[in-house]
Image (cartoon, rainbow, N blue to C red):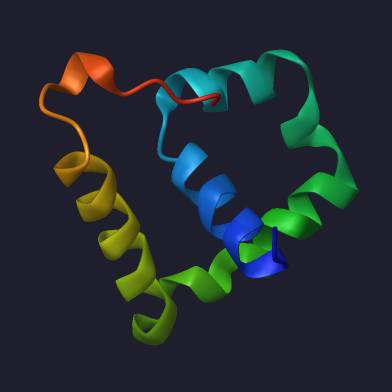
Length: 74
C-alpha cells in the first residue's frame, strides 16, 4: 500500500466520532508527535487532495447495496 492511500484511509477514519473518541481516551491527542502528524495531514483540506476524499466515499457507498454492509476498521 502506498503512503497516499494509507493517509487517505486514515483521514477518512478521522471523520468517525467513535474513532476520535478512541484516540482521545488513549491519550493520542495529547502526544506531540501524533498532533504534529495531524497538522501534517491538513494538506488534505486543499482541493487537489480533498477531491480524493469525496471519490473514496463515493466508491465505498456505490460498492455496497446497504449501509449496514460497510464495516470499517476505524
